[in-house]
Image (cartoon, rainbow, N blue to C red; front, side, top):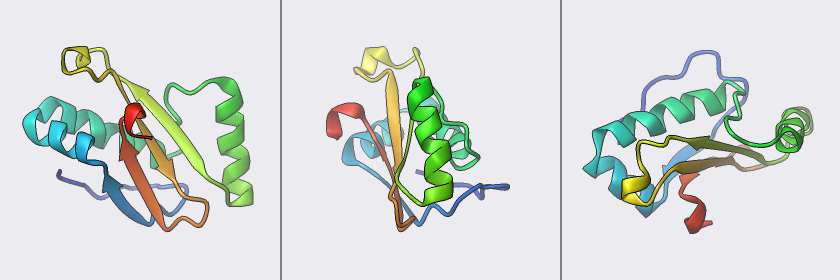
Length: 105
């Protein structure tokens, strides 16, 4: 998967990794790979995507307190692959950010 430089990140991501499911689908489907990259760019800029208001508030607090960040992004183009959304989780210590399918959690 091609990762691009992110400008104006609001936190450190640490090492960026993807699960096997995300990686395989991104390799097979360039549109999905672009969706993943766009979602990652949104995540590191503090756009938490399609999480509820409570999770958005938790993420805003996590930025101040240094706890885990969780984003979710939906794209209805991919249900044919059994995938309509991805999650992105940045660990509390900011050592790693993982891109995964919800069923891989």
